Figure (tube, rainbow, N blue to C red):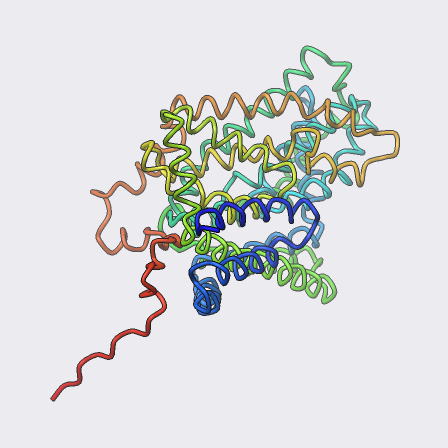
Length: 480
């Protein structure tokens, strides 16, 4: 069998293996090693395995992943989210659909602390979802609000998904954060406007709270906001502001955020040894999963490219005579479907590298492509029949809430995401204006430009067919 045929066979085998439920990271490594050894690489595939593993562990961009994850777990375990929701509920009492608005605002703020969709949906499913049901909210509306709000962490900075995309695509994470900032706020704002609209035009689906919960003294509202909303908002503003203003790298800002979350939990007297231990263990587990996914992805994509699989896909796409719009439509449709069986981590580190070499052919910016993927993954996590966010909510929802109710509730939010994607595509400035304004080349020094440059993506071309990639470097001539 020829090398290109081996590459395509390897890709088909991977899709088959993940459908069987095998661990994805180790499946990637096993397939890469096997097909690389059977193909032209031979024993050199083991050297490739060592080099790619070291490259992942030495990647400075990935340092921010465990730090941001730890920050999110500390905030989650310290019950800070509970305080935040209560204060926003008091503040929005006079607004139509106030509980839905408070839920979405809480999710949007908490999304800037953690990008873990399952954690946010589960927490809000235990906290806000029952509160909306007790207030007489329509089950479908309450379910849709909880699931859609919980997915915002994929897009709103500092998103872990954008860190992984930046490391994979060789794009500056700082610029990705700037590009996703306005679309993230726009999507959250559209969600809130929809909830308010339902409260205005269909008050039976989102009834007003009782007068005693709406007519709260101003002093009580301000005190609740000052003790719960403002501290977390200030922490997030400092972390995100330090990144966007160039005062700190994402890793440095993540370290500041981790320390700030510890101080915040201690200030609420919620920092116990058990919670700290649990947060550390969960962070280690999540970080290990991400790193091994990167190792497996780098090995798989390198072998796939070396065997000629990438060239087969490029030739196939070229034969379709696509333009920029149809290419984006095809790529986003594939990512949308992949979002059913896969988590976003697997999509970013496994399948996105297949599209990256094609972007230049269609004059698509990797920065813009990353924002579109982050928006698209919102729909993947919400769309039936394999919508991960809906299953997270079903796991903690009361027994009378059916999956059909949850699926029906998320549909309006899927339409909102599609509308948002259309607006960003038609008006790219929504995503690209802020990074262009903040990081225009003429406004930065060479040192600042070098700091903004992301790490180069792993390229299959680095593996020369003659085997030079694996040769030892020549010894430098000695001075006389």
